[in-house]
Image 1 (cartoon, rainbow over the protein chains, first blue to last red):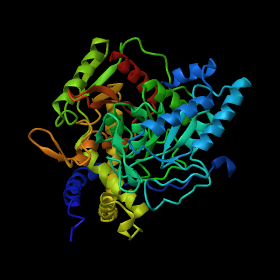
Image 2 (cartoon, helix red, strand yellow):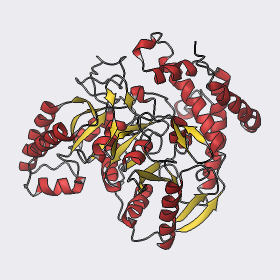
Image 3 (cartoon, each protein chain N blue to C red):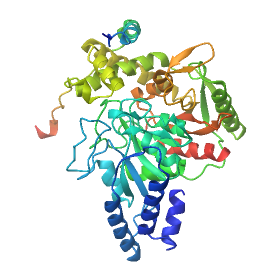
Image 4 (cartoon, chains in turn cyan, purple):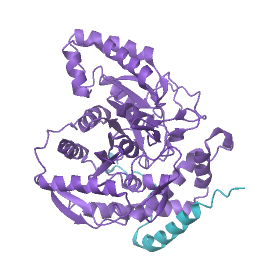
Length: 42
Length: 439
């Protein structure tokens, strides 16, 4: 049976190296941010 | 005929909208041997043409697209008309609303003749669709039209329609434009609404036009985007003042010699007309490409991982979806974090240059069954080669235009890619028109 994940092996290894090199330079991704309260409405 | 040429005939009453639609439909029946359409909507088109004729008679002119025949990639919702995405999953899907772009183009007067064929689920670069037929390249029917917007590109390249809609997630407008010898614009991310367009990868999907000329792309963008500012800026007499970035590496590292020669010749011609060439170090484009693949696989898995019956998919798309499921959450999150670094890198680049010139694809259209591309010392899998120079740009969202810049000795066309800062789409098209005029 064909292992469908085999072609991804190189991609994931490449990306692991990229992530190891670059992620220390970036802040956590902002994926959710609540809206700031509207001070004038308070 | 270009959009302006069509408009001149319609407004001079040398041709009615109905006559134009009938003539175009007859041409399509006679000459479309490329599997360009999945669904033709001839009756609806004739009905709209009658209405556009009545409007012209009454003095109502909706603008340059009034009465112009177009078609939509079968990924765009069309009310009451099935929208297959080139997939068996959606073979009976009939939306109850139009995509925003479909509505905007209709409001501008364009008349859709139907839905164009594409790579299944827009997930591939050949448009060899196992369910609705392989889209063949009008320049050489033994070759692929490119994808995923292959049917749209083929119709324009065959001279059957002046403009069609497309989408671009990893090159799906620019690759078929390059392979078919036409113009394709991937606008700035979000500039054209994705509302009512079946997604493939939420943060990489772009909607844009494919047309025979840059001006036709600009006229289409006037209707497709909701900016209120025109995209058909005045023609540039030369490139005086243009700072044109030429990449030191990556884009010219592994491309076929005829492509390299033609692209370099075009860049030199631009320099000869006043452009100032600036050799630039780019952010690591190989890393950008890899990161874009991680993002696309993860986002596509979020859409299609739930399907378990492989018989509903072509083998290539099924394999990609199974691979996509194996991307881990931490890989996706880190890819999104790294994305911000590329964003900053390109922001710095745009302080030094106004546009970047590269090849669009490293080779012309491959043969239908060609699985790899020969680059002299190396071979590369066809899909990887076709996407290598375009995919990364989707991750940062910059506008990118592919326009014809030459052909091989066998007459196979290929494109020049011009990339500009975010939201400089009109300026990019203006530069593209001037490049087109060099030919």
